[in-house]
Image (cartoon, rainbow, N blue to C red; front, top):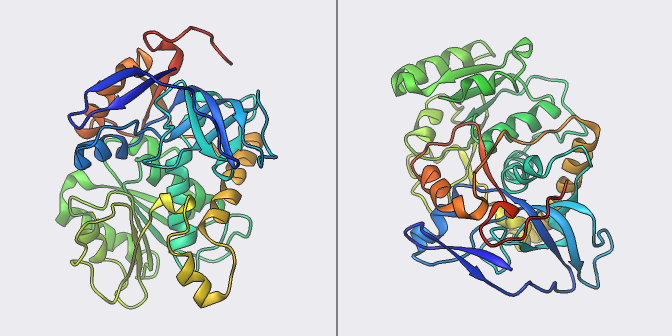
Length: 360
C-alpha cells in the first residue's frame, strides 16, 4: 500500500508499506478519506521524527481482530487512530482500536466523517471529562450555564459549541476571528449566545468579554480554550471567576503559570481515550472500574447516532487536490495558520500510484 511519511521539515515521502494486520481488538480500515489536524505537523516538526502522523480515518472496514464484534469487512466507518503508533490515516489502510471506531450512515460522506474523530472527541472530553458539573447531552440542563469558547471557529471549538448546544449550555461567549460567519451558523442568539472578535485587540476583547459576562449575571465559571496560546488564557482569566472558575486547555507541555492558582485548570489530552492516563487516580478516588476509554467508546457511538438522526454534523471540509500528494502543502498551510473554519481532508484514491476505485 501507499503510505505518507511526514518529515520534520514537513516534506512528505510516499512509500510502499505492508498492509497492517489487526491485533485482537483492532480494526483495519481501507481509507477512503483521511482528515488532518494541527498536531499532524507539530508532531514531526517538534519531535524531529518522521512518521505517518494522521489520525482521522474514514473508509471501509478491511479486516477485524478476533475480539471485535461490532464491525465486519465492508462496513462504512470512521475512527480515531492511536497517536504516534503505526498504522496512521495517511495511508491506503489504517489501524484503530474497536472502541474508537464508529459506524457512519450512508448519507454521511467520507469527507464529513473524516472531519470528526480527533476534534470532536477533544471537545467532548474537555466539556464532560475535564469540567466538573457539566450536564451530559442526554440530560440537558434547564438552568443558565455561561461558557466561554475561545477559538470558536476551530474544529475543536466548533464541536464544543455543538455539544454545548445539545446539553443546552447557554449563553455561549464565543471568541473567533476570520471564521465568525461560520460560528454564527452554529450558535443560538435567542439564548444569549454572542461572538466576539479577537482581531480588535486584547484590551477591546477583554472589555467585550466583561460586558458579555455582565449581561449574564456578572459571573462565568467555565472556559474552553481551544487556542491555548497567543494570550488566549490570559484574556480568559481576566473575566473568569477566580473562586469557582474552571478552564481547560488543549496544548500540553506549555507554561500556564499565568493562570491564577485559584482557577481550576486542566489540559484536555484526547489520547487519553486510548490509554487511561489518569484512571489509577480516578479509581483511587471513586472505586470505579471505568474511565476515559469507556467515555470514548460511548461518545463515538453517540456521534454515530447523531449523524444518523441528523442532530450532529461534522466540520466544514476542504478537499486537498492530489490526495496524499497534496499533504505537504496542506500541513504547511496549517502551520502558517491559513485554515479557518475548515478541515483539510484527503481522498486517498487521488494519490499518485493509488488505484482509482471510488467508494461512495
